[in-house]
View 1 (cartoon, rainbow, N blue to C red):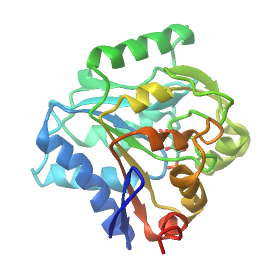
View 2 (view 1 turned 90 degrees about the horizontal axis):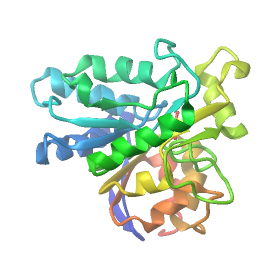
View 3 (view 1 turned 135 degrees about the vertical axis):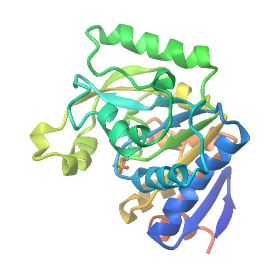
View 4 (view 1 turned 180 degrees about the vertical axis):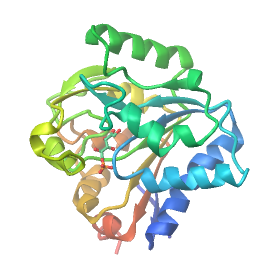
Length: 253
Ligand code: F6R
């Protein structure tokens, strides 16, 4: 089902399989329109099924990634690239090593940078030089974060070094042996860098996101719930599973 609710196009899929295919379809559409698209990638549990679908389409000869330019939203800091928890590693494992993306076109904040302030400036400069993104893929944190823009008293516009929120550390502990192993800091694109994208694709597929998605669409625009800023973007598509669309759809039933 497809809905237009406020400024959001909201697509709801009943099954995990349909959700993965639908999510991937938006990325495919972008690449068919322009094979040299600049696409912003997210990591985490959410987009994995969508990336699997892209790999399948590539293996079937239906997609060419050779001219695609990529920028990732964030990276833990500090972290080595070869650490299997790094987002560099995640992207290789879940997408890049399986497709014909040109490694020269891949941008991921450098978790090994010695001068983190300089790394942030340089990453933003690269985004700016690219003219920002055509399509930004986003997940959403249980606290309403997008990328690692955590709840705060202000929106941080550009790429920055940040301290992870307690809720983020708790949520991400599922990927680690223990919560003590979760990094406490990260480098993240800022709100302006995300909002500069021509199109935004927000993906969610877990019932635990229902409430935060409802606040994202209907709540007050506030840096305490960073995703609420998406109410100010003119081209946001959400692809949701039915369980996490419940909170939003309750408003129109
Ligand atoms: C990851 C990112 C984060 C995640 C969010 C949801 O690059 O930017 O904002 O999208 O934390 O994570 P999952 O998908 O694991 O629920």
